[in-house]
Length: 262
Image (cartoon, rainbow, N blue to C red; front, side):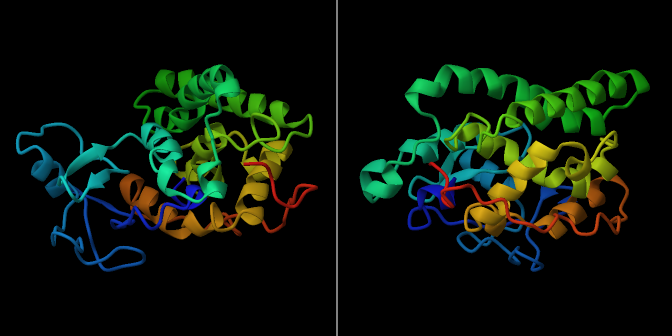
C-alpha cells in the first residue's frame, strides 16, 4: 500500500530481523534488517511499545505504524493500516496517486463480505492449521482452508483480472501475502499440504503471477521470499527446507491493457 499510493516521502520502512527471538522481534544487521533502530537506537520491537505505553502487557506485533512527532503507535493492525494509507495522505499526493482507491464506495459491501471469509479461512486459516495442537483442530481448519482456495480459484476462472473484477482493491492487497508465501512456507512448514498454489489452482496462480511480475514495484519489490521462508522455519523446526525451487514460478501474466485498473 505504501508503494501503491506513493507514500515513501511520508513513511519510512524499518525492517526487523526475520527471526522471532525470545523477547520477540529484534534488530540484527542481516538481510534487510539494521543492527538497531535508526531513530532511537532500539534493538527490540517491544521497546517501541513500552515507549508508547510503559504498562503495555499485550503482544508485540508487526506491522506497526509509528508517529515520530508524537512518539507513539498509530496502529498495529494491517487491515486498518491499509485503510489509513488509502486516504489519509490524499490531500498531499499528486492526483494520480490520490485517485487510487482500494476501498471504493460502490464495492464496500462486497469487499467486506469477501474479506470476512478470506481472512477467517485463508489469511488466518494457514495459522490455525499450522499451529493446531490436536488432530481435530488441524482437520477443522485445513479442509476449510483448501475449500476457500478452491472458491477463490473459481471466482477468478471467469477471466477477471482481480478478485473483485477489473479493479485492484484491498481484497487483493490482503490476500497477496498469504498466497505468495503459500508454496514457499505454509505448504511445507505449516502442514497446509493438500495442494500447492502453482499446481492446484491455475487461476489463483495466474492472479499471483500477474501481481508479482506485472506490478513489480508494488508486489515483487516488497516481497522477500528467502527471508520469510527462513523466518517461518526458525519458529517451527529450526531447519530451512530447500524447496520449492523456484520459490515463485517464472512467467508474466500481463493483462490486455498491460497496466491494470487501480
